Every structure is written in C-alpha cells, then in structure tokens.
Image (cartoon, rainbow, N blue to C red; front, side):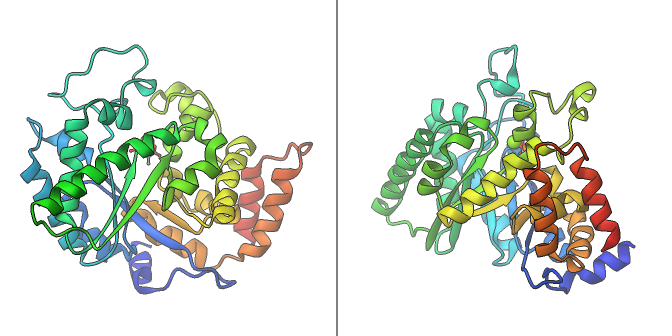
Length: 325
Ligand code: PEP
Ligand code: MG
C-alpha cells in the first residue's frame, strides 16, 4: 500500500466530480523538507517555527533564524511555505524561556500573547522572515489569535520592520500573505471581521477542538471522549468554511484530523478545499478523494448536520458513505 500511495504523488488531487483539493503538508525542521517531493504535497501549509527554538539550547539569534528560513524556502523549491510565528507555551516547552508556572498553560501566556508581550522576540522573528523571503513570497500566520486587534498589533510591528529594512537598503518580499490560525472559539463570533483583516485563515483543529469541548488534548482520559466528527464540531467547522466562501477568504485546516481519510472526507463534504497534514497522510487522503463525489456527500452530510432530531452518529453516516464509494 505504501507503494500504491507513493505512485499517487504525481496524480492531481481532483475529486471524481472535478473539485480540486489543495493538499499540503505540515513541517517544522529541515529534515521534513525532502518529504515535500516524496509526498507530492503542493506546499507546506503549516511550518511550526517553534521547533527550531525547542531543539536549541539557547534562543536562536536573528542570523540563525534567517538562515534557517532561507534554507527551508530554498529546499521547498518554489512551493509555498506558510510560516507560523512562534507558538511557545501550552504543550510546547522551550526550556531556556522561563515562563512563570501556570495552572492552566493551555489557556495561559502562550503563542501570540507571549509574542505581543515580548515584541523584541516577535520583531526579530518578523525581520528574519522578511529577510529570508527577499524577492519571494512570504506567507505567515499567527497562532492562538483571540481578538482581531492582535492582528492589527502584529501588522504594526511588521510595518516597522518593513520600514527598517527598506531604510537600510534590504530588498523585501515580492508579496506578503498574512493569515491567522483559528483555534480559539471566541473567533467564531468575529469571523467576518477576522476575514476582512487577513489573506487566509487556517483552522488549528487540535486546539479548537480542545477548547470547544473543554477537553485537554494531552489528557488521554478526556482527549478521545468526544468525537471530532460529531455534530457540534462539524457544525463549527462548517460555519468557518461558509464564512470563508462569503468573504472570499481562503480557508485551510492544519490539525491532525486533516490527515485521517474519513475526517478529510468530512471536511471536504462541509466545504473545505484545502488541508494540511503530516506528509505520510497525503497519499491515503489523496486515494480517498480521487473516488469522492463531493456533491453527493455534501448533500447527505449537510442534511444530517441540519437535522437536530436525528441521533444517528455522523461518523456512521460517513463510514457508510465511504464504504459505498
Ligand atoms: C492545531 O492546534 O491544530 C495546530 C495545527 O497547531 P499545534 O498542533 O501546533 O498546536
Ligand atoms: Mg495549535
């Protein structure tokens, strides 16, 4: 089967009824990069920049960050890379960065919150990203956004960095694509405002699910208690996909569920046309979608999600659909 999936890497990811699905991979280190060509992913939909920080023994300096990003872009060979700014805190520990002990680290001082409170850290990373992308396209996104104002604050810092670099004669990226991760439920009630501010949105379903269900992603006792393919979560995700359509904003999902063929099928059924996953999942997900009739799935799935009285698990419906196809 591995061989079978490998053979698919050059096959276009188009469903049976002609819908193109963008399949990207997640990465965080240089060793991940060869998988881009091996898997046939169209790009890197989530590059976890904190990995460089997590494996270092001291804070990586501007030059180290810049040369790392430059290498990543070089090895990606022109395929798009979406860099996520530092997502430290919560389950991501950086030993030399001593945050205070917190009772609820997942809900604590982490990700964009930490970056905004340590603007020197964030500005260094923005500068490194800008410099590494000189003459090319820079795609970047912010983790754990809770309010649209956080995006404004980062954009302001970005503007300062751009001015600084051009003042000193550095060349700038040819194009900047600015995005937000959607992993905090409060953003669900700011979807239109959010989408007016960004070029794209990427759903971090691992965190969004943990916060939506109030179930710690790292706690085995509760992590699998609720189903990502249950009604509540799929309705949440469908609302996001619909907001994307309404606002003409591209929406991706880059959490673990994108890499499970049945979940990826559900995502396509509720309107997603772009997903990012572990490189090894690209083959299995592509094999699934090549035989998929999206229109038919969408009508069955939407009807089930709109039926408040039916107690048939959506997962059962999806499995039946997958077997019949
Ligand atoms: C997520 O939360 O779904 C996500 C993609 O980010 P991470 O797993 O790195 O928190
Ligand atoms: Mg996350």
